[in-house]
Length: 495
Image 1 (spheres, helix red, strand yellow):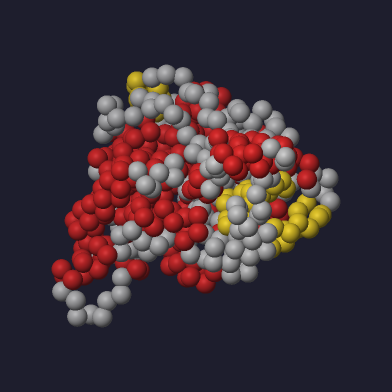
Image 2 (image 1 turned 90 degrees about the vertical axis):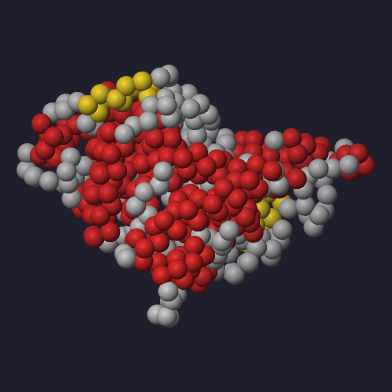
């Protein structure tokens, strides 16, 4: 089940929960009149039916600002429709949503991820919990942690970026080109797929968008499933021997008894549907393209990064992965990384479904604790992106401003901030949090400092109260200018 890297992030498919719930609230005219005696229940039900995304991320979040928890009122008995429960506020509150189902064994907790199986053809870690999920995370860990794996990730990132810049496809969007880089970095480092062609990038991006849209019954979704299967077969058939000749996550999914012929080995590789794991690109490519765009738009950010590199060069000859993971060595680069994560919030919303009553212990805005009994057939939400853009916690959250972390030593020591959890939280946080995403992102940013990258139009604002945080426009690159701004860039870019 080689798509665990994607599933482990719990990131891209929470709209399945939001839009799926909406379909349950379509009501008849008789039901309409039954609601009239319960004004708030009627209003809530209508809003859910009209725009569930806005109701959950705007209305329910507004209600939760004081108590850190809110409930969507409905006009029918709770046994008929799921109760919507939004949990916000502190890390301890969000943790209870993120880890729901892991301790009490509620098998319904991940029922909202069914479309992932349809798209990939396999069960991913998004569909697993408890021991099964832990086992798959254990298989993935060696390929995204450890000094050798991270050192290899840095080398591959530098090579892929250099090649990508040299062969930049100006007729393709900025988003497509950056995504192409990230996909190839993941392919080489985690799956031992040496090359993924640009022709597959629109497919991967489209597949993610369809999953966000909860559009599994559409003809387009069905066609994309076929295209994903064809991509998987093409990439794994061509690179099957590369996979068998190295250590990688796909190989770990194959069980051999030693009697298989070469063709039989390739067949087993194809059956893993391993290339489906490339869907994970959405997390890393999103924050990378946003950061590169703003670094080239705001000269102060680039100047600060170059100055930090200059200071480092005074006492060091090269940059290694330990330096990239040590936020005291490159504090401003670390701030850029954290701001990209906060600004885009790849884990936009956490969602879990309950099939049994449960109790949540919630800390309100004043630090007071209270217990809340959550009925069975509820859907729990925690709006991470909305929290990351709440002006109560962040000054001018709509601005891309890495300095907000430079000024806060607590926020700069890991992810200790009470209201910052870009990789989710708890046992089900993204396994890439252990270093992989960070070294790849920071390596790409350092490589990008060699160039001035100009886009064809001004950047649009990315809405906060949405499931799929992304630019709606496709941006194109007007110019990429190679520029050794200082000697430090020439000397230190090879780490």
